[in-house]
Length: 113
Image (cartoon, rainbow, N blue to C red; front, side):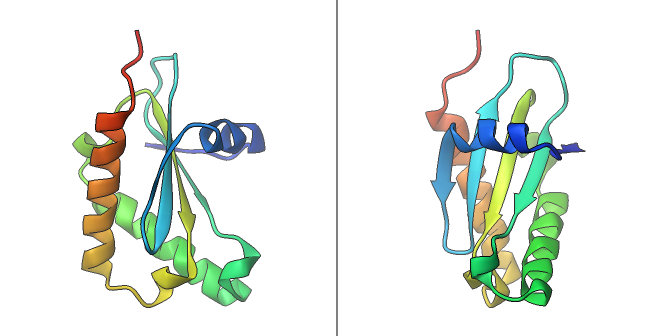
């Protein structure tokens, strides 16, 4: 799994499918290349202070590490947008939320040709 780092990649994913959960939003875009799954994380200043935003970002990164690699569709970009609720929501619940969001995105997105 690679990381998304460039703004253009984040904007491309933002225009694609999304699934909202209480602690985060998952966005997914299917790419036309044969590259690996790429993940991006973003937490806006609305979430809180720098310390709180970093804590949310760390929790989101840990969620992705614990998610089964098979759950994420190859040749896709994912962005997790953190929300303030991620600070207080249980980690196990967030992991279940992420699994269900990725699964629902998989079902609703058309496959590439």
